[in-house]
Length: 196
Image 1 (spheres, rainbow, N blue to C red):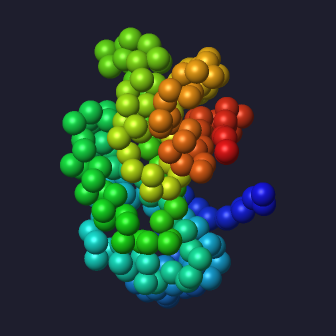
Image 2 (cartoon, rainbow, N blue to C red):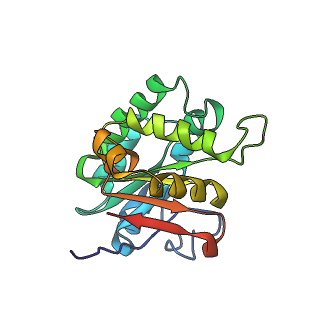
């Protein structure tokens, strides 16, 4: 099995990029075309703030070269406002829109805020809700989860403590839903990632 490493950024534009990364005088409408000549992947941050339009996603697909991969942040309505509850319609809309990317659709990133005791009494409660959410998902590709390191530890402990019989009795578990699931903490030293 060979690993594929892609290089990209966590957005395709930011303050200061015009004239520094993008050639001076280049129109913003041409940024995607230029970006695709330098990188083969991007994490789209704007999808965190709202579900993109199908027209916008079609444009992303059209303006990037073959083999380019998009990683999309799941909208905060799902991860922050509804915290994975009663969000089936919103997630379905997001997945249907993202699917326009076809073979260029890569990981979907679920980014969570810090949750206090007013939301979850303990990390295990969050992990249980996350698992329940993943059980409902279609197998559409890898998912990445960004959350606090202590929560990631709780998830890994819960997976390690499963008995072989429990594994056999479960038709679908979190790690079977995608070829790759990446866990990322807030600091580089706390990064945990896994692939199976």
